[in-house]
Length: 166
Image 1: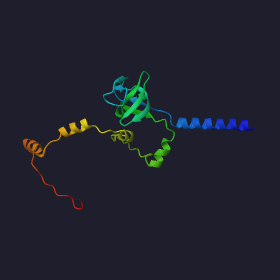
Image 2: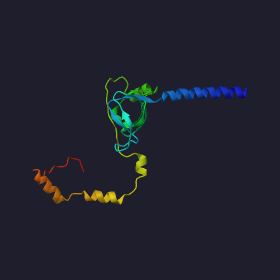
Image 3: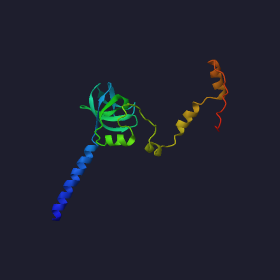
Image 4: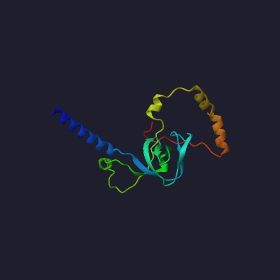
């Protein structure tokens, strides 16, 4: 009897895992334009192949403004704006849309949120004296700034602070 219960439990757990995994199936998309697939999510990374306009693809992961995609021939990183998502593959999408108030509005909004450094990158940041010196070498003195402004016909303008501003 215990063995039978165990087998039933395994069967139910497998079924539940299958349903859960299908809810988070990979996204698919289409290439909006011809582009270069990169080995890493950086503009200067080595090429790992080419993306052909209207080519179907599978979206594997997202990092900042980059998507890791898989085509029939290659896998690599491409800019987010080079891909049109065609299927999120997420069965929970409708529920989330209702919960967030985005269901049924009929208004399409497209934004790309890039916030700079990730938490991991900030944690692993190291002081770089050479970079600081390079940054300081680019500084402009007040006299140089005034001379540049005068050469462009610009003049100083005093603006009062807003009331209540400190």
